Amino acid sequence: MDFAMTAVRTALNGASYVAPRLAGGAAFRLFRKPRGRSRLRPGERPLLDRAEVGEIAVGGGKAVSYRWGTGARPVLLVHGWESRGSRFAPLVSELLDLGLSPVTFDAPGHGYASGETMTIVDLRDIITELDARHGPFEMVVAHSLGVTATFLALREGGGARQLRPGRIVAISGVPDFAYLVDRFCERLGLRARLNAELRGRVERELFPGEEDIWSRFSVPRTAPEAGPASVLVVHDEDDDMVDPACSRALADALGDRAELVVTSGLGHRRIIGDPQVTAYVRDFVVRERAARVGRAAGRPDPSPRPAAG
Image 1 (cartoon, helix red, strand yellow):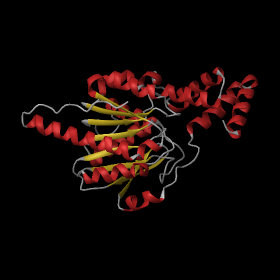
Image 2 (cartoon, helix red, strand yellow):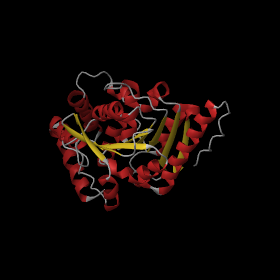
Image 3 (cartoon, one colour):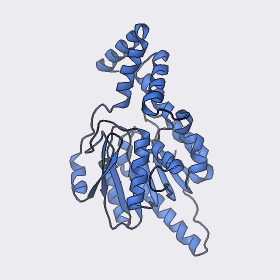
Image 4 (cartoon, helix red, strand yellow):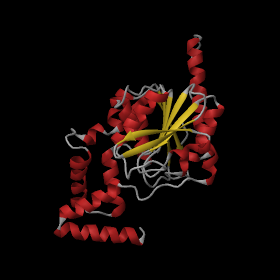
């Protein structure tokens, strides 16, 4: 833990003894706002310059959308917390080569979008609005908190229609909202009293009047009833932000519909643009496309690819 995090931990834990509500409010402000905007990398600029750009009003700001291709066979790419749509640049190029039409976005408080922050409900609404504009998406590729929001959109919609992709790629997925709170407190070394204060703030200020958000925003609990026909689950064993066990639990919950791939040495963020992971997604697209064509022709599905890891 660096000096800044140590100072924050000491200040919040100390304040929680004498002014727990004030300390809880400070923890809540840290929790709900990104630490900074992820910057565009030089290699991402050429692809972003070729995109058709749009806007979506959501929450306290405007999301910025990016679209490539002819519009045929659209695919949605959903980023996570403190990230941006351009991080999918290597995958966008691969999907274009396959004749698909990728769509991604920067959520409020991220990338080139306006606003200061986003919620999981904002992400859900962006997903369903993009599906209404450019879909129906035949596949969604999501990373981190984007995985949680994607499964929420599968269950609840939130826009003109409900999301219904045939396939999902879930990379380094956050299992539920409770995990985010617990992980935040764990990384800062906050007392259990502050965890409880933070949960209360989340319920009252982010989702007032909502019933049991801790179950509602849980992917493993609800994925079996909402998941698509086929899901590729990818996680790195060296991820220090989201435990790989979370993706194993998601794959178990989905049963035969899921294929689990475990990578090594990529962590939580580099996994998105890794060439091998991009190749896994490409293979997933090609195999699923061949399976659909085979079923239409009355041929049996090809043998599934064995899970790595």
